[in-house]
Image 1 (cartoon, rainbow, N blue to C red):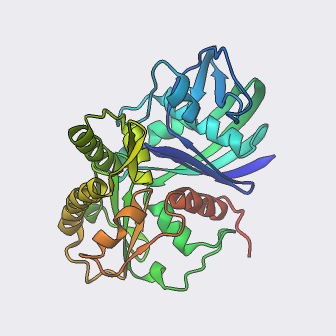
Image 2 (cartoon, rainbow, N blue to C red):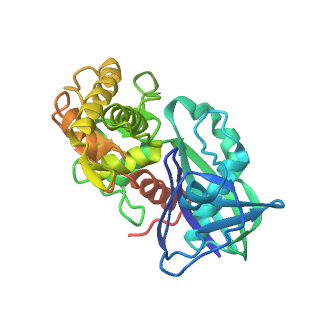
Length: 328
């Protein structure tokens, strides 16, 4: 069977979209180990384990919890095997076993020159096992676009890949600000034409927020958190110290303010005050947390629908159109 897929291998999370739904998992792999005990109160069995090329790997949250060390695709020179395993893990969760797959995916703006390398790492026939069940997938076509364009496609195309643009974004000058885990991407489109000199990336995003929160919690409570613990604390609004919940909302607000200023500084360098822009589309997992601060400079900024998965959803909609599967 043929499948069309939108795939977003982010530094924080990997997302895949198909006609069967959306899969999201942390972008982490680690060596699989034997887990000696499990009870049914914990739920979710033993998580996700992939076996490929004679090796066994935990993927996503299972790698975070159980592997002796974990690997994420953060550097530009990221290991093609890590990318491939994350892609296969996401594909098996949207039911592509035995399928021939055509996909659209993305790369950060500054890394877009690496697209041929990404295409080579993904294209071809793959045989592996997921939680002991044999899987095969033939990735026949891979199209790579600048990462933020996924959210623009999400705004412009219907769920079936047909152009549906009630706000007229396709005819204007639109900026996309994509705030991820480790990278913020900036893309400018003029009547859907990508404008290279006014697009770019910086290595500042939500991980910087969580690192600042982590340091502040250590100073205030003498409590050492991992970056994941700091992310969980920021989302919950508290940490637990000797069984007591201690609020961290002020620490999170201070961290968000500092990171917002860094992100906006680069935006102003690229786009000025934005008065010539029809809209500023804010997307990525950090979009909701930083939107109001972005509006202090760009009052016409708007949040993309489903910002954490908007790129993957847009890749899927564009894939339907690009591979001739769009329908009214």
